[in-house]
Image (cartoon, rainbow, N blue to C red; front, side, top):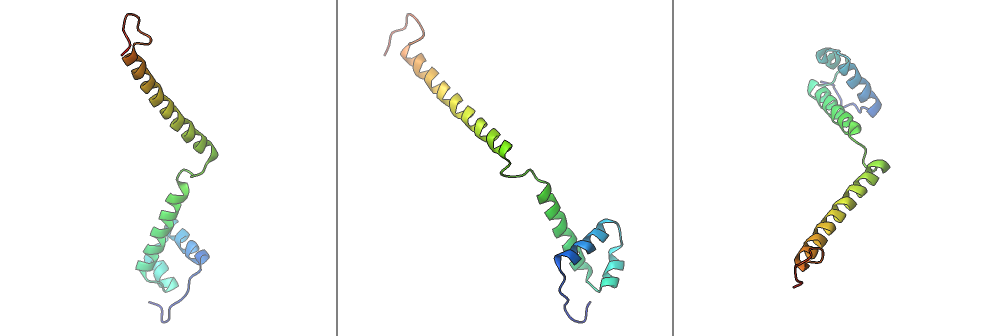
Length: 101
């Protein structure tokens, strides 16, 4: 649409996307800014993906890391406990009247 390619800064693109999100018609913005509708659509889609990514749970959150570590340790201890129970059952260690193998 434009006679010569125009460089758009992140800030200017963000302003255009915000206008789109506020409900300004894409056709009107395209004509006003001399930017193809397909480019405006790409900017909006990219901005929406960025918003989604930004709203995800933070990785590296110290509380979540500690919780994940604790859950992992609980799993390890549960498995260890189960293995020891099975070993004790086989040996008859806690069941009177059973002989050891």
